[in-house]
Length: 154
Image (cartoon, rainbow, N blue to C red; front, side, top):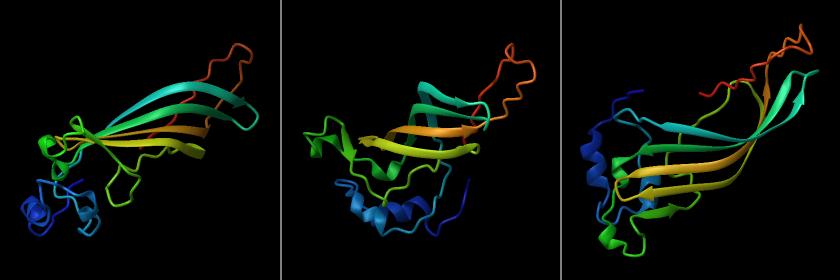
């Protein structure tokens, strides 16, 4: 997705101090992106449980990791000697995060979130999720049926 901003990235650089890059300053900035953001989404399924063939639902316990780069958040690791090149970002609504959701999810719960930022502006958002999904089981050949339990992520 590409939208236009007045001033573009040069305006962002004027508004922020790149030596320190305090995250609180980004809360006051206008919410517009001047370039595409590529987000790498990774899933690791821990457990498939509670398969309900009557209601055509199944539950998954899994981890989601999303990685993207925001050049505005780059910092000099020499100014943060205890950071080891990466800092943990507190739970904050002031930073943009991808809104990944499942089209066929009935309900989802999220726990154990971790957002880290490295010196190059690369963000890593990991979280544990438990979701109930709706699927078309179509059990015509039961008990010799195979079912593809898919989830649609957007």
